[in-house]
Amino acid sequence: MRRTQQIAAIVIFILVGFTIYGLWATREPLPQVATSKANSSVPSAKSLVDQSPLKTARELAQLVTTPEERALAQQALHLADYEVDLAFDAALRQARLHPPALTPEAKEAQGRLQKAQKLLATDQDRTRELAEQVAKTPETRKDALEADLIQAQADMELDQDEVDDAKEDFIRAGGDLTDRIQALKKEHEESTHTSAAVLPSGPEPAEQVGLIHRATQWRTLHQKQLQLWQAKSAAESSAARLSAEHEALDAQIDAAKSSLPELSHHSKKNKSNAAAPRVSAADKSQADTANLLKATEELAEDQKTLSSFDKRIETHKELATVYVQWIDLVAAHQRAVVNRMLIGVSIILAIALVGLFFSSWVDSLIKTLSMDRRQVESLRTVVRVASQICALFLFLLVIFGPPSQLGTFLGLAGAGLTVALKDFIVGFIGWFVLMGKNGIRLGDWVEINGVTGEVVQIGPFHTVLLETGNWTDSGHPTGRRVTFTNGYAIEGHFFNFSTSGQWLWDELQVVLPSGQDSFLLIDALHKKVSEVTRESAQIAEREWQNAGNSRELSSFSAEPAISVKPVVGGIEVSVRYITRATERYKLRSQLNQAAVELLGGKVEKVTT
Image (cartoon, rainbow, N blue to C red; front, top):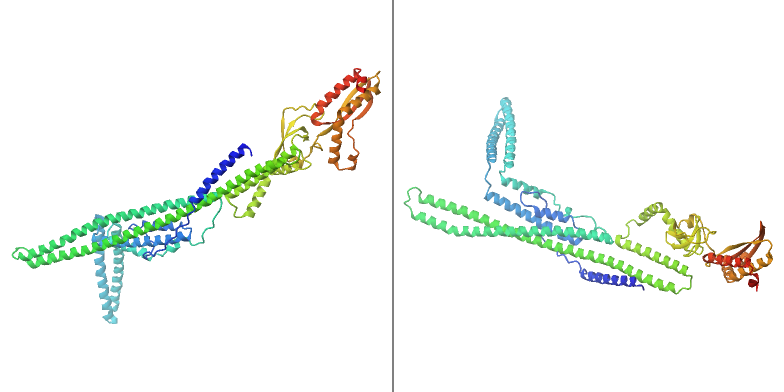
């Protein structure tokens, strides 16, 4: 294993350790929800009094996603509705005991209302009297009375309209607070009981897998938890505010109770002072009794208000407790989501770790194969790319999860990718063709689309050549790298050697001047070429015979062939011989030098 692979493995092991710790930390099960019976009440309302607990409970009820949350939401709705009922009762009691001072506008509306009510009462009495008279009057005199009765009824209707209008003006001006609260309470009680309707009635939403969906789910739960914390804080603040009012009222009641004996003592003192000039003893006794009765009634109402405070404080505390349980439940769901996210992360790390060790194992396995170096490199590239594509697919599957409509998704994605990535797809398929038996390898001299060069890189999509010119050139690189999309392996054509030795035919051309012994020079030149290329020719014959698998190649010979033709000024001798593509220039130089020496008169040395 290389050093980079060792470092990557160590990092992955460290991340796996952190992931295991996270799985252990988030292993706690969901808390059990105790469904306690809350005070029965009717939900729904818009109110003058503080109805925010019910409104908050309704908003939170719409966020329910599990049966456990549904039970807690129902408790919260019941408690919040009960608190609103208590708030209505407390507001009505407060309005009766301490009616607000009327504004000038309200006083004017109240005067109009009283005047209209008196006029209505007068018209009602007159209508009733006329109706009685009509019943007692003979038929001959009924017509006039019936006309008066109809007129009286019309006047009564007009008076009723005036009363209603004045009453609305009085309410709008801030008067008659008791009637307003009663009307709102009636609306609250007569509204549809929508506690169950507020809760989501459909089945529990299907769980979506994938790290992206888990992250979104965690964020949703986090937002829900923040709202629950706000609702809990509001319930605790309301309980604290009501507790302060309870303490103040309790102190007021204690002070009122301590003043009752003084009132009785004052009554006794009045009874003993019978000679008082302006108020008689009987009058003083009646006044003291009335004051005592009024104080007692106020004290009784205050005691009821105090009891209402106790109930409301307890309700807010229970509501805060329900929200605490709900917060714990949401936190448990968050831990479960984090746990599943960590499972996904552990899967990704496991895939990376397996891929890393698989790559190292494949490298060590390929080294043991008895194959050509270029074939080994090609096999290693194929295995590496295939494993990387597989790992990438698994990574995407863990991160995004499987698509809900897999068939439709694959069809549309395949059609779109086929159109948009046509060249890349064809090039990728061409890569497999090039990696096959009749393909090309690194170091091969090939010709692609008229460009000749040595193959320096074969990728999944591109082939790179180091340009060397055409076959008649010296074979030196031009210094240019030429890149082709692998689609030429399918849509076009390419030229490559048929054997791994990259054998090709080359020619040595010599012009023998007239006047010399041409046959002796030709024979010496042929022997020299045969001597230099004998070993190469034997290897080339074997490789071509193995590559061709045909009867024609079984009798093929790679021995040098010589041809002679007369030209102006002498004889042109061409010796055709076999050579490796990479050694062509070097061998040609060597043979040219030998030909020059032969022409210089060293035939005897060569022949001997």
